[in-house]
Image (cartoon, rainbow, N blue to C red):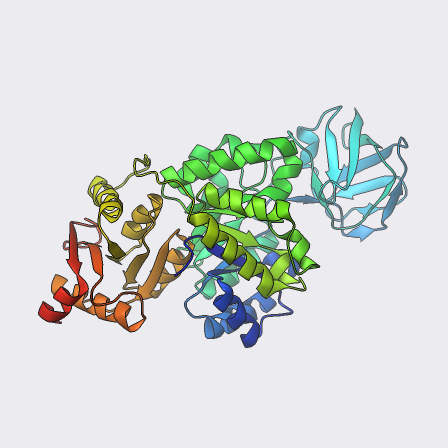
Length: 473
């Protein structure tokens, strides 16, 4: 493994043949994202089956639409003129026409007020509320434009009490549960209750999928600590976030969230327009390279491509570009062996993980090997962001897929052995066969002898040839 930062690539249901998927994996993709906004549940189910065939070791992430507000699907596209008022009402079945615009819910009426900004279609058109009536608001367009059907609506700074899951979300989640998808990225997470609602639904469908909270508004930022208590990881979705809060506030919010995630051993993904110009062009801008590099300098677990791989002209080149940036920037990331961790469930595992990463700074250790039943020990190692690759020997396929999202961890499948010596010997032989280590190399083993509840219990440093000469299975 030449890079430690993971890459998430979004796929379209129109393009995911074996050759394409293989080329993305070879370029450096670790996780494939399926965006439910642009496909049907049936299409998603077919994609999952094919991806499991083409990329059995990759993780899959299903991205829900979440509690979003949109313009109605019914009626006409409305032409608006700057300064000429229009009326906005809430009814998912409402028909937009003339000077009347319907949104998919009326719950915004409870909190919206005069002076509120209403942003349509990712902020392309701005309206300002001039008057609030009982069942509608009067808004003044700030520029000429056309309001189309099914477009996003953002009302910055105004909390809207929308259901955490829509009926459409539930249809996709049901398929994800049936297919045993490990990651669900839930959009517009505002509070821990949103996370719990998704977990409850998935449990009802027989799934314990890991929930990634997408932070896209001020509520999500304000409640990040309680969200971290309940989510498996975080995605900083800068598209809607940059509409909901001032653009200049996004970088410090990103930095704060990344820091909290690392301290909590929670995977963190940075998303949206990272290499956006590569949708149409074979090379990124210097600013985009700096954006990706900045995320890597912050030591995020993963960086994400959206349209670049879903419908861009240069998807493989975009992944290759990300991988090259990661490889270069990771050489220059300053060490932080005193990283403070929060939400520590096993102090012994934390201590041994810290010791392991420190040892790699003072000895010529080629690799860290750990066995893991739940993935916890590997995630502790990832939190310290060491320079040495971590090879996680997993006894469960789902754990191997989950660790595809953790910084610097390369998960591999392995049967369980009756003794510690047998495990170490088998792990070393597997890594030698894959060309990861050689006979003269030193390795560090972090493992446990007392089951998953107790976690890691010992650290051992030794030379590969010594293990091969004395080990038995």
